View 1 (cartoon, rainbow, N blue to C red):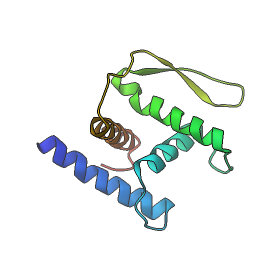
View 2 (cartoon, rainbow, N blue to C red; view 1 turned 135 degrees about the vertical axis):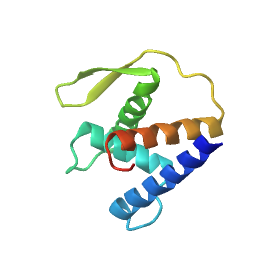
View 3 (cartoon, rainbow, N blue to C red; view 1 turned 120 degrees about the vertical axis):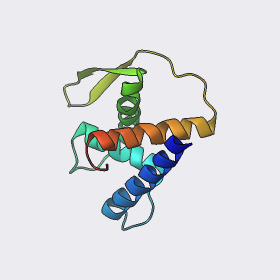
View 4 (tube, one colour; view 1 turned 120 degrees about the horizontal axis):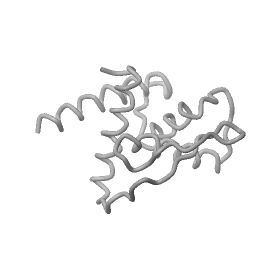
Length: 118
């Protein structure tokens, strides 16, 4: 139970910090935070993205976030600087709530690693 409480506290801290920085304080949703991770990983912050690029940014983020869990492995950067990952292990079937917890845990871990939260 302590782990769940710590995750919840860190998640709330992270959402608060990101929301104040990127959404004028309106709480960011999980998908928006995944998108921000994708932009961070691509490193091309000062540009607009087309719809298909936004989907690709979220894919980059998911791969990067789940890399420490052994599901993906960085492969290469293409000529335009986009990172590519390869699947190391298929994700197990998860219920929607389990997926959300896994992603929140991965996102919190990512921002702890980046020292954005502690």
